[in-house]
Image (cartoon, rainbow over all chains, first blue to last red; front, side, top):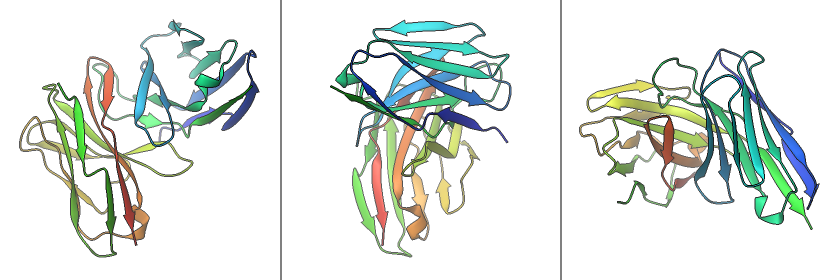
Length: 114
Length: 110
């Protein structure tokens, strides 16, 4: 059974600081997603990582994928309050064409304090 | 282009009642899925479809039925609601490595 684990589950950080959220998964996958969710809202797609060594950046967020270690990271640089949200990673356990059978991590609740 | 729409936004049911959560998409995507989200947990896959007439079970299918008679619509049926089905339900479509999520339906079963 594929498991996806995120840590930490809760992260309180000060504005201007850097931090990393980790996403470990238990089986082979070449397709990993990061999402953001604000309270009471749906999921917003942040990154799609499709191969070993993939790195993507958008603003203060950077995501990377190491398929050999089965690890993805979401790095936050110089955090600002607007980044406060819950962040989820999700893995597509099937090979080949993307499917709609994602396995999600439990999420990381990020609170950025002024 | 509305993307993925879900109705209703909120629903309260009594134990044993049945209802259908609606999901529609106007992006002509073949793949559609239903997930549930419980507090402190990520989304879990209930059922999915790879095209009209084709559905299959996900991680937590018990208590739910689906059908896919058209590309656009993928309704989720609760046959006899239970308090354990209190959750937020998200419908999603998939195309070219990207998932598109609907706004969600918040369901409470008393």
